[in-house]
Amino acid sequence: MTFWSLHSRTVFISRLQAVAAAMVLQLLVAPSGRAEEISFSYIETGASSGAQEAMVVASGSWFTRRKLSHGAVLIHHPDGDLLYDTGLGRQVDAQFEVNPWWARSLFAYEKGVPVADQLAANAYDAHNLKAIVLSHLHWDHASGVVDFPGVPIWVQQKEYDAALQGKPPAFLHSQLEGPNTDLRFLTLEDTEFKGFKRSLDVYADGSVVLVEIPGHTRGQLGLYLTLNAQTRYFFIGDATWTLKGVQDTSPRPGFVRWLASLNDDDSLTERMVAQLHALQEQEPDLTIVPAHDELIAASLPHYPEFSSQQ
Image 1 (tube, rainbow, N blue to C red):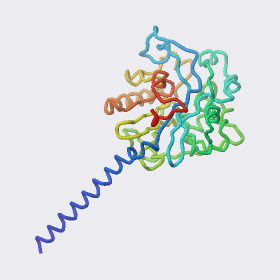
Image 2 (image 1 turned 120 degrees about the horizontal axis):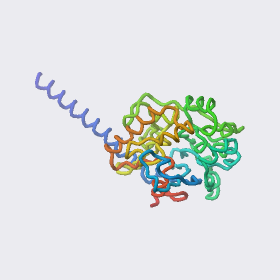
Image 3 (image 1 turned 90 degrees about the vertical axis):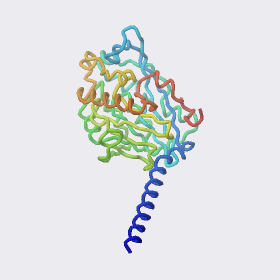
Image 4 (image 1 turned 180 degrees about the vertical axis):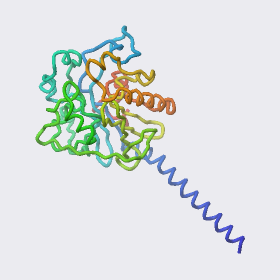
């Protein structure tokens, strides 16, 4: 009797371990198995007029010229596509005009083709979009919101509230006042992901996970994209403008932060950058993509090409 009880217990535990292992394996390979169905494309909408690198990141060189990129990321998923940010939209000139002269000079841009126009030129139906996820509501990320009437816009409530209280040059209220703008407040779960305290698995398959990266703004969202076990990207909004900021754990230059009040919380921003630096060391194959790093953007597939087509 004792032998059979022990034997039965051993068999049960073995089967339980086998089931658990199978579940873990399924989680690990699910994104990989759908790699041909999940892909992304970078949509460039313009660039900054240019500045010395030392004005972009504190560890930068005064002898290196940078022209930061303005763009968005289109993620194709069988359960509905996502657009991460909107870049410079169709009405950006009129939106930007409310800024004081010094801000128009400091943040001067060279306008490209808006996301909505690039999609239309390639016969992309905006109804394919499950949602537009805004990393945050600064002018150069939310400019194209009004170009997508009726498409759900996902943003955290605290980010929206801060934007309403904010003012130019960071926040431009005209970008959020479209008559058909469908703002929906996103609630993250208290589930830790890669060291970040709050997250949301958008498709419940591990392919797209939103995480909160506060500091630059109150409710900034990063997007962790897994195409397969070897191919992962982390789009980090404006946690830092350049990858050099992550590599050097270096903040934006102090005089620029003072001039334009760039961060909601400077100390928290620096902690987030340090956390990103640690994550990069833990996952050296992970591609971290700051929203404006033109050097990283150049390495990404550009619309209408997608990652799975390379």
